[in-house]
Image (tube, rainbow over all chains, first blue to last red; front, top):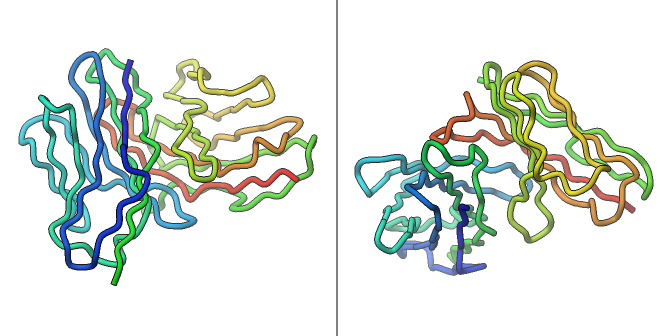
Length: 115
Length: 115
């Protein structure tokens, strides 16, 4: 069975400061990991994904995430937050071939960037 | 190119009425997913279509919910005898072939309000 946890319902950060949105996962084998962002009254937009290779994945809008197998984590990061980054962020996981084609999503973390 | 579209964007109905929600996936995408997102909650998987295979209906919450897909194009989600707890945003997503590495592309959602 696959699961994902986003331990923080809300993250507050000042504009210009670095931000981290946490995600941990549980799978039987090896994971495929995804981050999506949802702006108000919009659908989810893809940010980045980890499939294999380099543990540091770079994505859209200056975001990056680091896959840490020993800690089963895939935290989303950005060096300098913008007010426009304020949105709802979802982490998702799928197991590698042989697992479900249906990803499991976390509950979401609301990121608020203060001017 | 055109993304995933959903209609209507908003639907207000009375308890007990039937509603039909529509999703137009990205052209050429063989995989299609329906999710429900209740206010302040994460994504709840409902149903998954992949090509001409039998759909995975494991997420449908009751027999009042059903969905169809015509070939690899439009899908409709039908909710019969709507209840107030059905109020939510219904999101549709498509991906190129439903593989574990696939990125999902989401529509803007249909906000359903049951009075």
